[in-house]
Amino acid sequence: MNRVQLTGYVKEEKLELRHTGKDTAVANVTLIVPRLRGEGADFFTVAFFGKAAENAVKYFKKGSKILIEGSLRNNNYTNKEGQKIYGNSILGESFEFCERKNHSSDNTEKAAEDAKEEFTDIPEGVTEEIPFA
Image 1 (cartoon, rainbow, N blue to C red):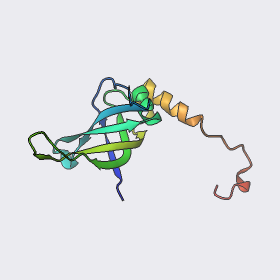
Image 2: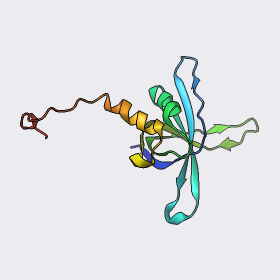
Image 3: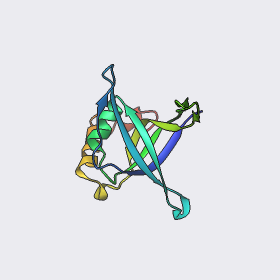
Image 4: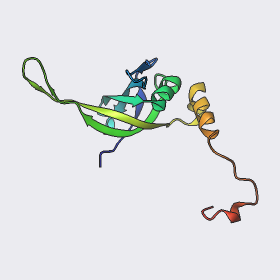
């Protein structure tokens, strides 16, 4: 199973939204992930596509603490000199904001409000009809 979960901080002040030849939205974000026991940090580039890319550009701001879920990809190739170059990238599939509400920005609050619109509140007194409540 190829799954990656990273929690860290957005490095960029503003993300750039690009489009592929097939008009798919693409955004790259650099995630600063602190190491255990305060021994520095690692910087990871995460690529988002489609609606996830559009939302990242819309809501991420420098310093936002986010959890990214995705997969690891190999970017191995042979350069012009015939040397084998090894690299990895992260394909971001989803993200969540990790900040408490009183520390979040207007952008993260707006993202949370947008996400709430996708759910319906359960009216009072109907919980006995719902098998998992």
